[in-house]
Image (cartoon, rainbow, N blue to C red; front, top):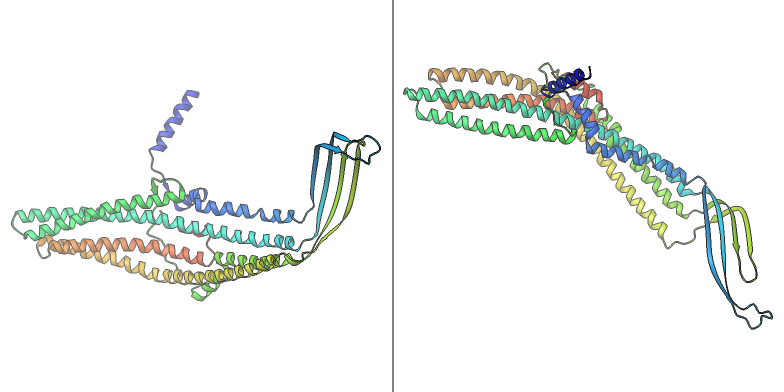
Length: 440
């Protein structure tokens, strides 16, 4: 039985290894979520920032420390007024320990630092969600770049194959004395350009595959292509100002910048607290034991009290720190304004891209039909001698370009819909799943 299972597993392994498995966009995103270094870096930073709160809280809680000491001492007594002969050197040991407890009662800077931890965590949360949205868009872009590269390769191969056929026909017709030699030369030139375009297309496939691997950490043998039944939907609501307003309030980069501004304002107060007094409750228990020529000595001390520290002059350090934090607040405010303007620009660009993309896709779809019809007519005219090889090459090139433009326009339309939601702060994995449903 064991031998049978080993054989079965071996058969299944080689069967799966030799079967091309097509992955879709959601599966690719799963790989990216686990492997993309850029996203993982932001996630690690978020986990590190989460430690700011317990660290700030620890500054407000009691601290307990224990210290101990042991020494070897050498004592020398030399006095002419000593009536008893106690002069000379003596060596003895001493030791002791101390247990100290400190409970901050008022530390203005530490209280504000604890409040700042909320701002830092909220900022890190916004940055992590922004990184996730960015990963969705980068993954989708890289995925469609691979599909576009394969599309272009297919169009280049079809163009080369068609022009190869036209070249053969031109040569055959020249051999029987029908066309001029220029038709053969034009057909040859068109074929050579198509051959070079195919080489470039293969190189673009390799480059786009590497770009996808950079995000996912893996190579894939096949990607699910975009289906022909993809709907062309307008943004809802169909008002650009509504989307712009949502972006100014919900864009993740704007929210992160707003939390950074709040943190900078509190940092000013924290530095200003350097002028305030501090109050701590302190408790101490210590033991000191020592010897000497006159015998051993042991001292035990226990004390509890309140300690007040009032800063009077620190050389202008606190004032300088306050001025510095004011300028850092100004920098954060400028960063917030930049984030708001950027969000507004990206939202309007993406919205207009979606609207124009719908018309562009429909127009290019019709352009493909028209160019294919024109190509068929030109090829038919070439066969009967009413059109030249120059006309065929031009029609073939126009058809290939129309097909490339149509395929690219569909990908751009989908990417603009995702960019619009990213700019408005509403992009989610569900949007990715929706695009994934349109794949074959």
